[in-house]
Amino acid sequence: MEYLKTISVLVAVLINVVLGTELTFELPDNERQCFFEKIDKGVKSTLEFQVITGGQYDVDMELTAPNGQILYKDVKKQYDSFTWTPDLGGIYKFCFSNEFSTFSHKVVYFDLEVGEEKPIVEDANAHATAMTLMESSAVNIHEDLKTIDDYQTHFRLPESQGRAFAEDLNERVMFWSIGESVVVVIIGIGQILVLRSFFTDKHRGTTAT
Image 1 (tube, rainbow, N blue to C red):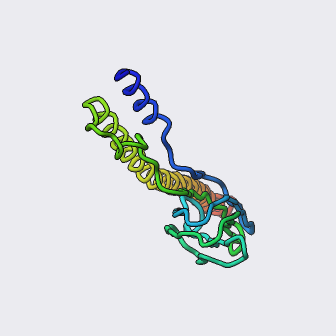
Image 2 (image 1 turned 30 degrees about the horizontal axis):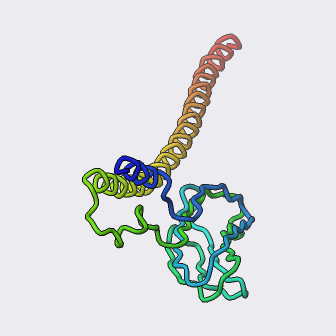
């Protein structure tokens, strides 16, 4: 019986997640993309977003309640986080807009967490006895894995942003170097032609004399 109880705790550690959405998507220029999520009344929710690449790393964002009320709206934000507790249950809409940009597309990351995470052992407070060592270890491992996953996500975003910036800079340097090389070659050919014309003119003058 104790063995089955421990196994159930370990399984709960593996499948216990917070309802929500995490997504990275491309937002073309002059476009607006919206996402929808059903949220019940009184369920605390958090929406976090960040522009990874593109232009000035900014985007417009708007969060709308089912009754049309705008809960959050800001323009040209690189990243932000908004937490609210709905007074009305229903379909919530959050839109990202790049309509102010005429040529640069963006890559946007957002994370929507809906509700608080349920405890691994829902009736832990009702237990007459303390958790076993195996159960305590499972809970600690679960909390550590959540922390590691959160750190990895937040470190991965600046890494992607820095990589995109480095690749863009490398491309610009490459084109600049090619342009300089072409200019140097043209100048070299021009100098050769000018020097050649000097000797050609002198030779023609001597012949005429």
